[in-house]
Length: 392
Image (cartoon, rainbow, N blue to C red; front, side):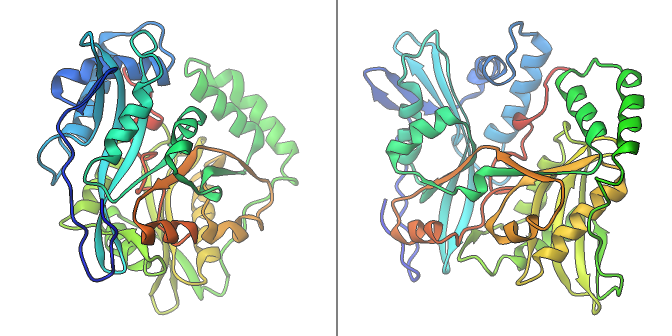
């Protein structure tokens, strides 16, 4: 892989269709692998001790949709499987292809999702072998925003750059008891609402003075928020990315298709869009979040121009509050970290490793300086694999 200048497109080198080693081989995911990969996924990431045909079938079909039949892409899948010497599945690496640009130069990016190995067939080599294989492909950079600590341990020797701020999640609590009840229902869906909701309402009534409504936008209406639809969001989001040198390059309806896939996610409620505007009607920022009344809202994407992050974040939080959500959670970004500090009842936690690997010195420098748009739609947390309970 060669370095990229601002005046020349990078030279692409196709990866071998099969990479052999003494431990086994790595090749693109095929339709014949889907059920085995789905079963491994449910075992590793959903802790399913008993696997049901319906759950395996639903998971396999979803993996087919995002890994084998991505809109606008042809050829072999970018996702990879490791097959041991006995012909059994040793591991899987979910990879989504994306386009970036850096100072006018086009870049191919690999968005890395689930990385998993079967402990019954793998002896610790599948993870590193899969990562090395994706590095040998046509990609100018590899990135992830959802690495767990095991994946971080694999990636560190491979010189991935960690973005510490993006590794944090934030949670703003509106109604503490109702939020705790919502979290319990997510963990144990069978819990009856009648056993939790009355107690939660009573506690939240007592705590009302401590947990006040979030900051509202200026009453002068110089800045106001409005709901928008997916098409408006897809049209405006790219125009707000000029502050980043290393940013996505969505073409040929790719962003609307990506939003349609993101809307299939079920765990956090329907997907909503909003924008903040000045008095002339110019959009200052936009946001997309999942949410429904009585549940915890989840931020998918937020973006603002210039100094308007505070107003856009206020609009997002106010929209979730007005919807009846009990709180809101999201991934942090350095751009709006100062505004987050201004909220009461807001807490931070480790939410998943965000990191980037590239042999391109210009990409590496942009990542080091924080001059990269990453996370949200340029990650894999928007997929159903990150949250949904398949087969239920």
